[in-house]
Image 1 (cartoon, helix red, strand yellow):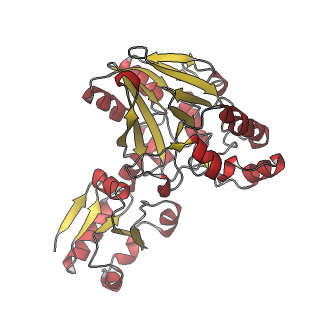
Image 2: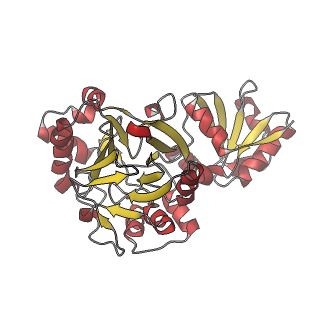
Image 3: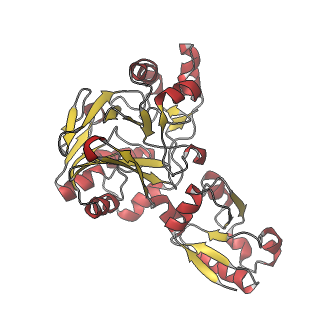
Length: 375
């Protein structure tokens, strides 16, 4: 039977469209348990590749014949071999092009909506990592917010839609993924903005992003208003765009809230986190659509693949926004923390400009799920 290649966009569409897929993951059990391709209607079977070196006969009864079958490994090679073995046994199967390393880097652009006077807002969904980044476009100019290290994706997309990138922002100093902000700014001549309270140790020049900044994009009809909202980091800054969207960085997610410990200061920052969520955000319009920098679970995706929800809905449904007792909130945030992101200290140092790992090292540093949330 045939062996096909399934590319990253094909898998992404199956995730977004909630299609059925059977995934045979031949990575080690620990790697699979830590991180896999998530899909609401996906089924899985995990067996390490080395257990199949003598043949796949023993797992044939585990592989369905009435569903698409995708074989997945870390880099592609092992899954290709297993797919060929299954084909020799009479099955139609596919293997994932580039493996999990490529899946970790794939970005799916989704148009969130139109802005006043002809502007547009795009969300770039990194399905394999849970990262969300944004492009605001107006009158031939573009601003990028919380870019991943795959800088070419944003630069090429801007060219496709006929926009020049003039501003690049990070809502905070990221600890779970390497920012592409500085790289994009260098490539395009754009201004790179970073909250100064997060930038005490950075070794490069930047524009200071502080509460109250208004940065105009394009024909002056889109204002990006910076709202100082510490808690995940001491410099965390949110954006209100077009009086319609709230880009919350890693302070507030759809189903969870930001963790305050990735600089080792959980006890110090938990009070800032509560004040941002329970006071600063309460002063905003509940009609604002919250667009975070990450999502935690695949169920947070909307039907079009975007991640976003009205602030009022989150006040009603997000548990992290509904803990009246301050001590209970403090306990929940500081005692319920997930494992820290892989290589998070190295990632922070990279984003400060202190170290410059090569491309392969950067990939290794980012492998695995994001862990910026607590719920």
